[in-house]
Amino acid sequence: MVMKVKNQSIWLDGYDYNDYVSLDKDITCDILIIGGGITGLSTLYNLRKSNLNVVLVEANLVGSGVSGYTTGKINFLQELIYSDILKQSNYEKAKLYYDSQKYAIKKIVDIINKEKILCDLEKTDSFVFANEEKEIEKIKKEKELLTSFGERVEEYNRDLLYVQNKYAIKVSDTYVFHPLKYLLALKKIIRKFNKPIYEKTKVNNIIKNGEYYNLQTDKYVIKAKKIVLACHYPFFLFPYFLPIKTNIEKSYIIASLAKNAHKTYITSNKPTTSIRYHKDYLIYLSNSHNISNKIDEKENYEEVIKKANNLNLKVKYIWKNDDLITLDKIPYIGYVKKNDKTLLIGTGYNTWGMTNGSLAGFILSDLIMGNTSKYASLTDPLRVIHIKNTLPKIMNIFYNSKGFLKSKIKKNKDWYQNVKIKNINGKSVAIYKDNDKEYKVYNTCPHMGCSLIFNAVDKTWDCPCHASRFSLSGKVIKGPSTKDITYNEKNLF
Image (spheres, rainbow, N blue to C red):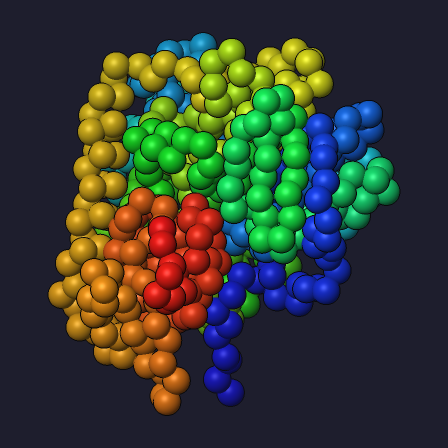
């Protein structure tokens, strides 16, 4: 019997799409949180008992964004991140980041236990392994650094399933869970405290008007004194903030039936290979790359399936995820503007979204409540990046320019078997024909002007610069774009 492969996240299979409330009137609030993923819900959970009028809005459904496409690891052993931070900054900052991850993990586990959340939480051993000889010394240095922090780290020279292990280090006290079950449980708890969560409520525009922000949704207006941008790629008010300070990494994930080995492991080098187990499934991440590279999605999926077949993995689910990578490997959590405490942000989690998104919830809620946060200076979005990061800055500009330029050059005919690009009234228009039905959209991303690539796997229009996605008919599925690309003679960006 041939097993059918589902092109969706294992966490979203069986999602209850009917349990939501959308905004149905104009409202005024003290705090508006934009984004219903791990950051937004963690922040709202931590503010649930406050006297503040806090509202959360989500363009789609809670947990259906990046948080629903993660591997679901709660982990402080994050490739060679402490060595990276040491190299780019100093020992004290590397140690503080380590402390922040241990703090976040403890808090997440405490919440799960206190609230009796059934989210398949499992304590596991975690490994960073070398699949090349040249990586061994790097891992040994990471071990020395972690040991100096007071962490117990073991060497591991035995086999690891489905990968070639030349050398590895092992730690305990790390966890895996079902991210969507966790988020939906937080949503249920928050509701009891009368903190509104409005789903399928997309914010299209933000204007500062006196002491309030005016936010325009499709039908209604929200007035808020403070805003928390808890979106994966925050896009309001400062469109050129993130392209220089970050890049987007795309990875592909499969779920295959396998016996649970109660371990998680990840490579020390790129491209990343990451493994964890969930009940009767192996979750296998691979083929990570900068979003500006390898933009033929059909070819990417075929490559991942081939790799899985070579490992004798019977793929049941396949999906992809985008991660925002910062220059210094530390998230951006805190205030966006100097001397302005009305706009906060949480993003740039460097592939460790469950741990850092939860950390963001603690830091942001502390800042809002006027409490001292030990880690706010570490994650300050306005921090000065060390001069050692000059090259990464240049590379970020190159990759973003590369994505922009590559999106303008359409040489691979396989991408466009059923697509024609035409210039109509001075605008680039893409026409896709699916059997007898024709779809016509503007072929330019409203965010920053990149030309869109047709995704033959998902049948979507994708931006190779900053990962916006649009449906066949042109409706925005995923930001940073907030505008549709539906063809209309009067449609202006």
